[in-house]
Length: 127
Image (cartoon, rainbow, N blue to C red; front, side, top):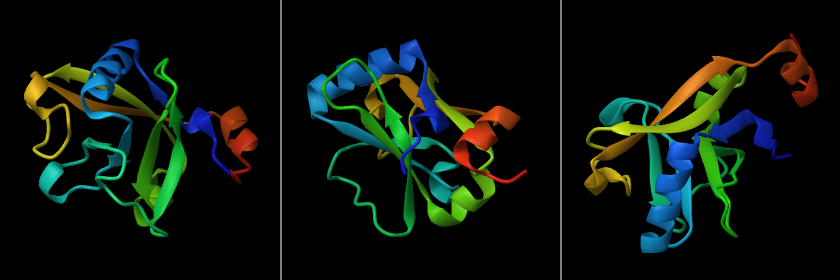
């Protein structure tokens, strides 16, 4: 089951995603788990990053276009973040080398907060 309430996007990030979609076609995110790119949300054209059974679809971001932007995370990482709501935002700075916003002078970042009790109940997560 996909729950779109697990992820959100700021208006500023949605605007950049619309610009990038016009350049690259439909996009998707994979929340990096560390290593080379820290914990940056990596944005790719759909089909450039292949997800598999080891990935969890967190939800889809409505950016005002026909194709919502799906957000994935590795299943192992999700075990640590399952109590967390994620918001994709954008700030000035150099993006990660493989993420499509890298040349724009901006970078995506993930803001997080703990899910509320009502949200946990709605997702069927035991407290």
